[in-house]
Length: 307
Image (cartoon, rainbow, N blue to C red):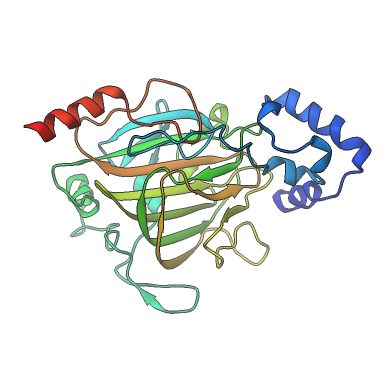
């Protein structure tokens, strides 16, 4: 179904119909047409319209260290204090299943042996499920904590995503899973959904230590495009479900840099290390470049530095 829908969205529409089709779509999904850089008639296919760019300057990048990577709904945010973390309020998923069974050694697509930095041997720690030990394996600084935020992109949102921080990426894992809807109304009824759907996980380090960015696929079009990861292929016929593909990476992304796009609405999950006391903003709707750090976090960090 997903691949068939993808082909449908790439069919060229007659120019005379485009304005009416896209105007209706915008009306039904809440697209802000004032931010669209081209005339509606210039988008030859639905896919071109779904993955459209924005007018220059409409998403200024905030000065804080971490910003929203996407336009969407901030479904959940907060500290990660156990293996089971929330995908929406009161509905959880497993961080170990979400990251996958990470071995000490694995192979990339070219059969080269690689070792995922900082994530190796995390699925089993001395045969015990010990959260504190697991967390210490991730943290670069034992005085820090792990945090997560979940941002849902609706069909009417801007479908491209940007780097939330300045960071270095050293590992990628692709899970060829399901393509269930990630609409918050459905995720309330399917625990563990994020650990089942097709997704692409990137891990590395930022100024406070461990950082991960995961793009989660969704119903209709699961394709995820990462501009500088040419070997990544998602939602393709020859892949079996629940396969895992690892790749060693060595590149950096700058805060606010456009790094990829979804070919339909989906979800971005950030799991990262930060100092204790980190707080997310009190809002539901977020936009690319908007600070994801609440004001009191900044004040506490400054006070700690001064002391």
